[in-house]
Length: 142
Image (cartoon, rainbow, N blue to C red; front, top):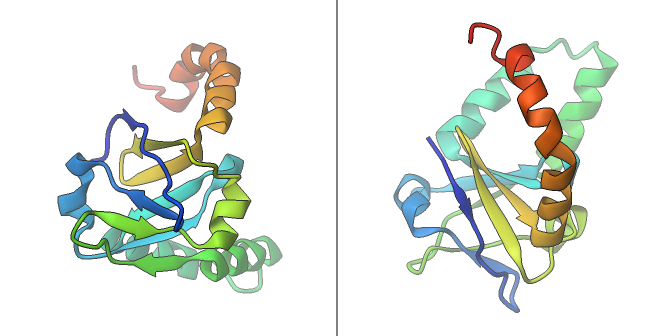
């Protein structure tokens, strides 16, 4: 399970040093994809494969499923962290997420999200009020 918020920086070569607490779980490989709200999602390979299997279960005759799958798989980039825990984020994904030097890496249960710091702050400001309102809707048994 990935938890917490971390604030690494993107280096001049487009590399991110993964937060130390996540490196062991990602050391054998990961997949970076486009996420919602213009962030990037980092999946451990097993989690990516599980998610991909659920996408394959959708009928290829459903236009929305085809459109989502095309973009999702076309943007996917597999990577293996180097000895320092660095991964390269391809330019197309950096552009999609509007990444600058200052990043935020958010633990999101089975995956990580990578946000540009300014975009994350804007998202948090817009979402904080809705957070408590969504609690009963998203987790109905509480």
